[in-house]
Image (cartoon, rainbow, N blue to C red; front, side):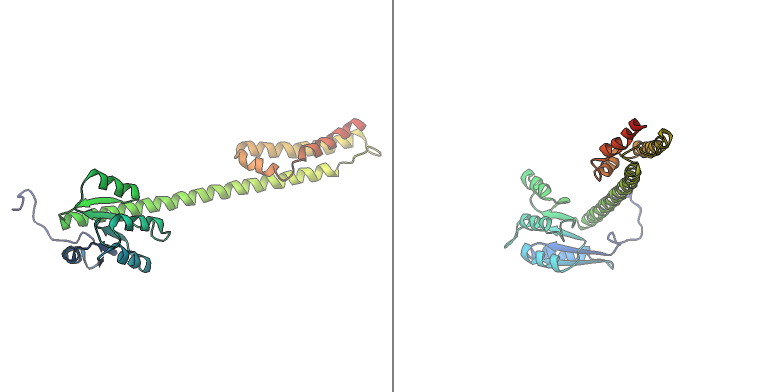
Length: 243
């Protein structure tokens, strides 16, 4: 009996986006019902009678979601779920358990193994269609967020490398200037030595200022190129004692 509070309207498909579903169940009647009730002009349903057949289909095809029964011959639903999550190609595939089992142990085990949802029989096919659509959307959003997080991390690493290169170039310039300072004072006045030392000090100060405004890790990595930089510059500075 229909609810009078619900107004009549045009019937529509729930799975209205291009979708490929794999239904894995040893019950031929349920597989037939799934093909009838879940198929739409944009949703294609394929079926398998056990986990072993399903695993071959998954590895050789492209599916958007799989619905697994638990009790099946050859390879049961839990075994198939483990195989899916262990396969690099399939590990991100959305998986829903579709079973008569509704005990805590089965529910917990399914989610521990990586199931995205757990649905019990008997099946309300219209409700299941909405549930499938929700899982697909949630997994798609999660995947998009993961990709964006990876891109942000890559940009951050790229920026750190750029900063490290900048500091590395600056330190190389400082070392070059330090090496150009004479190690003896013959022919040079104190004023000439002071000018050279001030030039080196200005380069070092500018580099240290930039490092304070950016990531300290980048500056530390730049220092790795010349562990004796301090000693080299210090040696140049000590030439002032000759003046």
